[in-house]
Length: 87
Image (cartoon, rainbow, N blue to C red; front, side):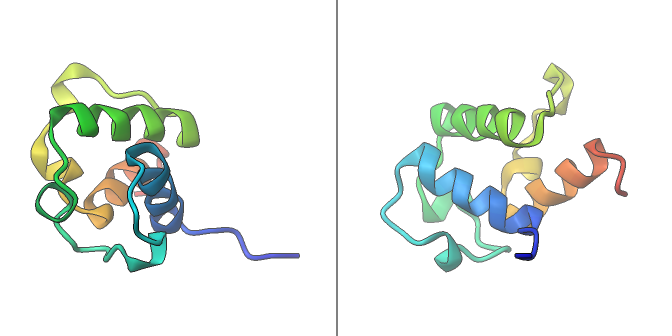
């Protein structure tokens, strides 16, 4: 039975797919700043949020949108774990 993918791995795969990046998900560092490294602007950020909602079945309230939450894969994974009640 294959191991379940980590939240970080699932996030990287979703980000590459939704933003149509020409990188392998494994090449995205957990602490890499997404805004700078992959030119994530407000529209691309919205794509990431939609992807999180679809992949993890979560929803975000308007007051939960801050750049810090979406700055790195690690930061997004922390928020996903928090919303899933894992933290």
